[in-house]
Amino acid sequence: MEHAFYNKLIDNNKAWVERKLGEDSEYFSKLANGQQPPLLWIGCADSRVPANEIIGAQPGEVFVHRNIANMVLHTDMSMLSVLDYAVNVLKVKHVIVCGHYGCGGVKAAMSNSSFGLIDNWVRHIKDVYRFHHKELDAISDENERFERFVELNVKEQVLDLAKTSIVQGAWNKGQELHIHGWVYGVGSGVVKDLDVNFKCDKDLEAVYQLKF
Image (cartoon, rainbow, N blue to C red; front, side):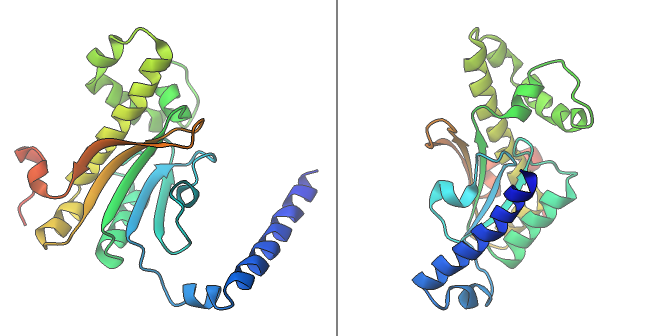
């Protein structure tokens, strides 16, 4: 069964290539010339949340970084490297942090269970709960609290993104860069814009504004 699944992946790739070449014989040669996507997507690693499909984007249009619960951690060199390349080399105009309802990482942060190695990652999500515990604890319905926690986590990650020296450095150079926060409904397919947006360092509290 596992072998059949693996072979099916190879067959799917061949069929996809044939389909794309049928639509445009130069499809792959154009992609090979390089990329200049206008958007960086920071999303969850959840298999149900494919960045390109959600927004109807083609290959070459979205630069993507994904991790558990779409976190923006200032010690995460992988995320920072992707962000630096996207902002300073590719010159993306937009960065979207996209969470999703039903996120397992956020759900884990609501509990006191130990899940192993991932506990160290989940602790950062628990910090978001601590920042907003009064609002969250006041929500009696557990699922409603869970969904609100997902939204607040995205908002905190957008804020942390704006705090980075990478993003502020781009703003300092006059580069156009907009940061947004979304939540995706796995059961509906619909994106909710949380209306949390940053476009310059003046949108941050003074203590976070860096001088270059």
